[in-house]
Every structure is written in C-alpha cells, then in structure tokens.
Length: 240
Length: 248
Image (cartoon, rainbow over all chains, first blue to last red; front, side):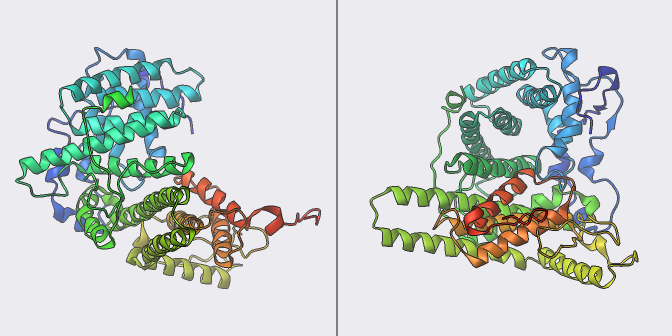
C-alpha cells in the first residue's frame, strides 16, 4: 500500500455538509438500523461523499503544501485507528467536524504529518508545527471553559500523536484531560436535559473516540506498567 | 504543557466495578452503536462492536486490578490477606470474562468455526464450496485459506482452518486477556499451569492459521504472542526442538 502523500492536484475533497455534522447522527431514524440486508449507504456515509472539488476548509492558517495531509487522514486512518472496520464513516466524520474546529483541524494535520512524513523521511517539522497550533487553540478554549466535542476528538488525536512519538507521559496527561472534557460534556448535557441521562448526550462519533481512548489507555497501562487513566467500565463514574 | 492545559478541570477517581452496572451500560451504549455502526454489514456489525468493546472493557478492568495488585504487594498488608484479596478479584474478573463466550454472536461464530473445521476435515481434498450462510456473521466474510489449501501450523499441533478472521482475532484477544488475568496473582515467568499452557497453544495455533491477513489488531496480536511466550516460560520449561536439526 502506498502511503506517500499525494500531490495537491490529486486531492479528493469531501463536500461540506450544509448542516451540523452531528445532525444525521442525532436525528437518524432508528428504524433504519433494523434493516438486516441493506446495501444502501448509511445516512452518515451518504452525508460525506468524497468528490473532486476545491478545498472547502478555511485555509488561512494552513499552507497549501499541507493540504495533502487531509487526504492522508481520510484514506489511511481507517488502517490505523481501531474499530474503524465496524464504523467506517468515522474518519470522514472527524474530518467534517474539523471544518468548523481549528484545534481539531490542526490535530488531524499533526497526526497525519507525523505518520506520513515518517514514512517518507521528511522529519517532524510539519507535525510539530500543527501540534503547537492545535495546543494553542485548545488552551484558548479551555481557558474560556468552552468545551465541545471537537475538543475531545482533538485531544484524543494529540494523545495518539504522543503515543506515536513515544511520549507516553504526555499521552497520559492528554487522556486525563480527555476524561475531564468528556465528563464536562456529560454534565453540560445533563444541565440542558433536566438531569436525564441519554446515550445521545454526546454524538456517536465522540462515543467511538471515547472507546478508542479506553483502548489506548489499557495498551499504555500494559506497556508502561502504570494504572489506567479512565475509570473502570461498569463503575458508577464512567465519563459518559 | 499538557498538564497545564487541563489545570482548569477537576474530577474524582473511582475504580470500583459492578457487573450489573456494566450490563446496564451496555444496553445504554447499544443505541449509539447501532446508529453509528456500518449498516452495510447488517445488525451483526453493532453486535460485533459490542463484543469487541466488552473484551476491551475486561482488559481495561484487568489493568486496573493488576495495578491494584501491585500496590497491595508493596503495602504492609499480610501476605495471606493479599492472596485472598487478589484471588477474589481475579475470580470475579474471570467469571465475567468467560461470559463473553456466551454472547449470541460469539456462539454463532463458534458454531460456524466448528462446522467449518468439520467440513474442511471431510472435504480436505476437494475444492467444493461449503455453501454455508457466511453472510449471517458479517463482518467476517473472509477465508484465510483457499478451498483445498493447507493453513499454516504451529509446531506439531493440529492446524486450524478458520472461517472467520475477524472472530479469530477477537478470540485470540479473549485468550490473551485470560492469560493476562491468570498472571495477576502470580506474575511469574515459567510458572507451570496446564490450563494456561493450553490457552497459549490455542492462541498460537490460531495465529498461525491467520497467516498474512489484514492486521487490524496489531497491538493485540503482539501482546497475545508476548503472553504466550511468558506462558511457555522459555527453554527450561517447554523446550522446542528444531525440526531441521532435531536439537532442542
């Protein structure tokens, strides 16, 4: 499989959903899931078809030479992240959320640059540059106590970046941060929803990211001989 | 920078677990999983997702138990009390873990593997299509060995003919967790245990049969083989003879 970054002229760009990228997920018809033999694309997949089109992202803070990293993310992360064979629309959904979320956008670019540039011996300059920008955006949001799902996904990708760089101590700190952000998202939902818990308190995409984080948590726990960060599933205090 | 980043947030840490709560939570989470899982694969995708998550939950919980065991050993708690506490935790973990094999989607996959193995034995010299309803257990429609082919074999142990690579990977994940849990009370290299040994052999047989399939459980595979190595305990406990030289 060729993992080299493609030239810009070969880029595939997703269409921008005209509505909130989480809307399909929240408002999907539950009855559809009972179709056992359907070969139709799921609503979430149908929302994000990949077509040839000009770059839709605000690119003021992203040099054009870095745009292929988005393609790398869309095409290769399904081979890298766990569970994506069962949730194949996850990478494109993450990308869709990033269109409106600068921190996540730079997280995507940083992890993609880290992996793609390592394979082509191009160093870590681009990866570290985007990591720095992502951290800056996150810091601004956290200082303003503006917690959202894009932030949670972004933090997960930063943790992944650190795992990939062998910086497990930093990765663990990000996982701690992720747990707190997820807890805050849950509290925010409860406050909005009259204290009634719901499986849709956060989007399915963020729930999947939480599952990926749990997996990362126990892998790091085994590798480095330290207790896991996330609470035990089945305890009264799971984050979501 | 990362620790400073989250200094605005605080949350308590509680690591107790409860089987009933876990079951409730699974039903709770089933809703978003059903909504988000690949619908092209039918309802089995969400069932497999739940099964995979359940294994990862057990592994995560085992890591918590292992960390607590380490703390206990470093404490001034009397050894007998430590042993009792650990055994109790490990027994509870193993009991919950083994329930995984009773999940419907797992039982169906087990049965398919059993029938596949049986038919492979009966028709090993033919290339006849078995005609099994493989599509009932998607996302698992992948055969490792072409009809009539021979799967790779672990040492002198009987080769396994796998029907379902996805399930085979999960099953090895299950076996890895079983070995890991069994090591919590006695984390010792080469400690003889016939049951653990059998588990490690099964893991390696399946790994050999998987061949060069797409590796979607990379970390899990490495971890499983590592644990199998711990179980075999090195040359002193289970020497392996070289087929070519006859030397051990």
